[in-house]
Image (cartoon, rainbow, N blue to C red; front, side):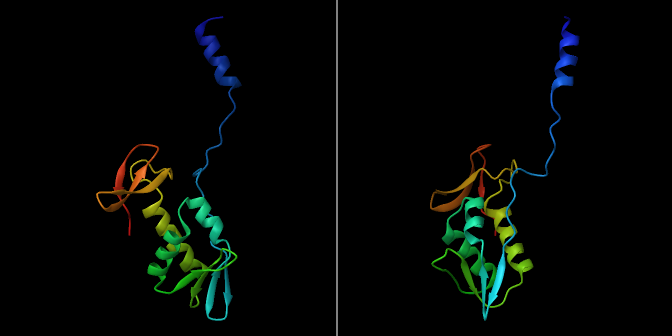
Length: 134
């Protein structure tokens, strides 16, 4: 069997790979109103998927939404005030772009490290080091 024939056979037998937009998908925040409090029901799922601490994500949401917040005994985020899902989702997306996704390679394989007293985003995939987005 010639090389070209073997190559053609290998290509024919290789399964097609379905392209997906991304292997990294952040769940949409599940929001519920409790009086004057907005509860993010799936806060733990968001924290787990983003691979960040509860306090880091909660602090960012507080700053972006201009409100006080706490984590209840069930692990849900409780934001003071009434917020629409769209607004909370936009804040989570902004956090993801600036604090999780690498600006060089676009992968989520990052961690926040201290470098000379400043927090920076270090990518485990490509090795890039960059500032945190705001």
